[in-house]
Length: 417
Ligand code: ATP
Ligand code: MG
Image 1 (tube, rainbow, N blue to C red):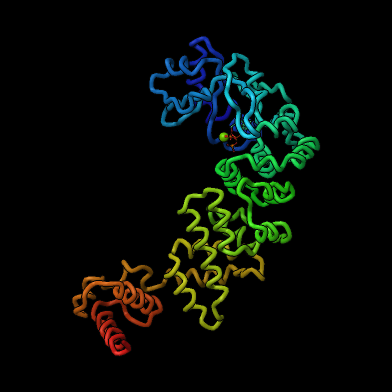
Image 2: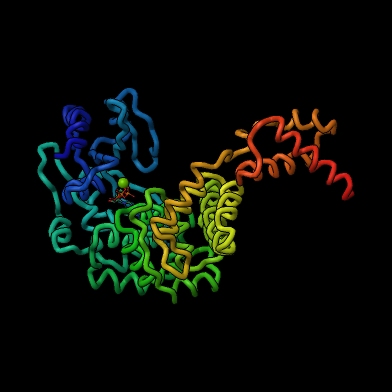
């Protein structure tokens, strides 16, 4: 048992003392067997959801129709799910209903892959009726049972297959890969949200580069419910950039990096992320990294410092830091920065006299008073212009100098009109 599992033992023991079976299942078991850090711990039990709830007065019925109850123990949350099978799958996506059962081996039988269909008992003993351990040892991803049927039941499993193959350096069992290639088109029945969750986990794993290679080989991206544009699909199919995603700790930096490496346009990336139902905030962040990259690519080498400072002001510091991280991993024609170049830009960023309007020595109301003008859209234009001058080192960030300059610009503006 891992330390995380030992911490959860009291839950298993409570279920057992109530007369029920309870074991660790799913990803935690797989990760423990691999010696990897275990994140969320799932427990399966023969107790019915109501029985589990009566043993844990403070439990939360998070998914009763699937038999799942969440229990909080020493500030950790655990999902406890009643042994179940799934009945008749609806149109290649999800089971119509679940039936609670009292046999662990049948519960494990409904799971997608042998490596995800193992259990660990409180004693630490591994229960592995479908050969998950031997598949793990031989680096094989295999469906539990007939691959054709399992992918037809739930087409999302094909995306999960690619994720696990990449994340754990596996090879698909020939039968699994054959079925996957045969049934790819069934992915059209699966909600984009579910695909997004798997792709995002794929991008977040230790070896996203490897998963992406398998994802491309799978051809699955041609079969999304909301199709990817032909242009983007073509790029993803024909270009094969060298990717270096591991060093990027943020998920959105990894996404932006992939789009940049494949020379995607920002509109193409945005459309894909929207159709995958990414939160707007994340789409904004990813796209803004791409925009800053384009901005820097388009700027003349002579005015580099100026372009960089204006880029930082325009797209924000967080974006600027992400861009510097990514640019070091890109290939040369895509705008690679050497570590030294990135360091220089980093230093410029750090030394900028002001980076945001907040840091500017004057605010909107002072400006209004000094120029004796009514508030209006001119204010943000003027403040931005002042900030740019300060950031570029052309003006000191002091009230008098800023107001003085504002007056000059104001009069020039009046004369122009
Ligand atoms: P991760 O560690 O990345 O979360 P995981 O294996 O725990 O991977 P989850 O999506 O959290 O993946 O699912 C938990 C378990 O539920 C899986 O290990 C598997 O046994 C089962 N499972 C999840 N999704 C499916 C599915 N679509 N079909 C069959 N079984 C599934
Ligand atoms: Mg999990």
